[in-house]
Amino acid sequence: MKKLIFVTGGVCSSLGKGVAASSIGALMEARGLSVRMVKIDPYLNVDAGTMSPYQHGEVYVTDDGAETDLDLGNYGRYTHSPLSKVNSITTGQVYQSVINKEREGRYLGRTVQVIPHITDEIKARVLAPGKDPEVDITIVEIGGTVGDMESIPFLEAARQMIHELGRQNALSVHVTLVPAVSGGELKTKPTQHAVKELQEVGIQPDALVIRAAEPIDEGMRRKIASFTNVEFEGVISGHDAKDTIYELPLLYHSQGFDTFLLKKMGIESRHADLREWIEVVRKYREPKRRVRIGVVGKYMELNDSYKSIWEALSHGGIANDAAVDPVKIDSGRLEEAGAEGGVDMAKIFEGIDGILVPGGYGQRGSAGMVKAARWARENKVPYFGVCLGMQMMVIEWARDVLGWEDADSSEFNQDSAHAVVSLLEDQVDVKSYGGTQRLGKSESALKAGSLIRKIYGADIIWERHRHRYEVSNQFRADLERSGLHISALTPDGSLVEAVEWPDHPWGLGVQCHPEFKSRPVQPAPLFKSFIGACIKNADA
Ligand code: GLN
Image (cartoon, rainbow, N blue to C red; front, side, top):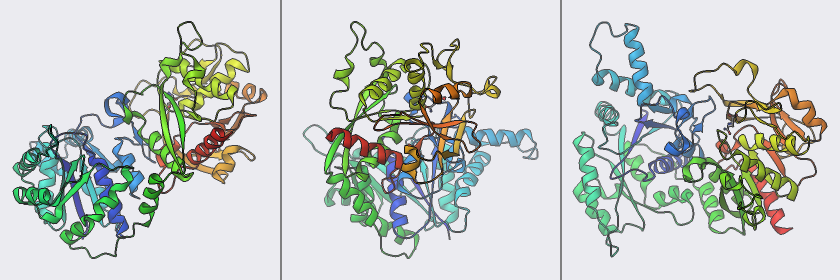
């Protein structure tokens, strides 16, 4: 029998439901079970592709090119659940498909309603990823907070599924908060109310993950258990991790959470094999050294905008027994560098061991990124360009080495005679924004003798993509003739996938997003190598 675990949140948003759901997934895998992860986002956008990173953080891209919520990135870092379009459900998708079916006459003249038509559509979508015979458990995270209007149909679908499948086959885990008031006293009232709210929609939680700054002691867990009708063993202290969020699977396990969930579902399994997680946490706790990486981007105010970049950098760090201290540098601040009243580049980059320019869209801040690339190239500081960061390497090179002062991306300047980054001819007329980029998994052929070839140890690799503009083939020969190494192409040779600086310790840009595949237990090769180069630079 396949099992479902619904993960909901109460009290307020941003309690870390995604990491909680992921950690439960990691624990189930440690027990030898096969899990699938599903995220429900109750917004009307069909996907996250058109959402500003300021609104909703990073857009996470799956192999099949779905543009999804960043929680799918957490699932990818903690579990082996395949992630694709079916693992991300939004209100927009659900309504779109129900309305399409209605227009096709498939409801045979019936009145189409939220219950049962929308809820049936939700149920079918929740069950779809777990259809594969090998799957044991599907973990379904319902975004938002219980009590929001938007999530009502999803909670109703969850209630029906728990009722229909039976409590042993569909569990509810509710993530809540125990805040401290002035004086430090912990308050359980918000949790009481949050559970009541869940009970009001007909769902009795089987387990509670209690978020708090400090561990929740046994007395308080007993108290919470008694007023929520949750068994004591199911009340888990989900206090803040001290060193790394990758401690959570171990923290839950130490309280018997996995044993409790398996008992509830009637699943017999092997003992938890948590060796990988123990090793990861040990490395985070005892780094042999630290490195400082300057990340020059434009969405710096919101930490979540570059979520997978921060994570991949830290994975690259532990692969080198080092802790990474990221230094956020708003590219806008560098635009006036050198000019009167502008910042001093040497001051900004003082004590920084390497520079990374991540992905991004739009002209604002781009001049600052070009300056960061020039600084890194001239001063031989390790530089890693990811997507837009690679395009910036090409623009900087064309301006300085080829002497084309107007070199640019046609994304920023449509009138440049040297649009070294531009749209492909067949793309020029694209009017729609949702899903019109080069999205998802695709291959790159790595050139013999290149740094990237050495790093991956393979001729053909694949990574995920999300971008619209490409290095222009019109100028490829000029770029190469002037010494820029074009070190990876699509296997058909039509598109540039990576560039490298000559005579530089580590100057590499890729058009893809290697950060999306990085896991703490399997750091992305490029991040591992980049941090290694930054350590060397620090020691030089
Ligand atoms: N704006 C650039 C493009 O669309 C880069 C995109 C990105 O960095 N993800 O090609």
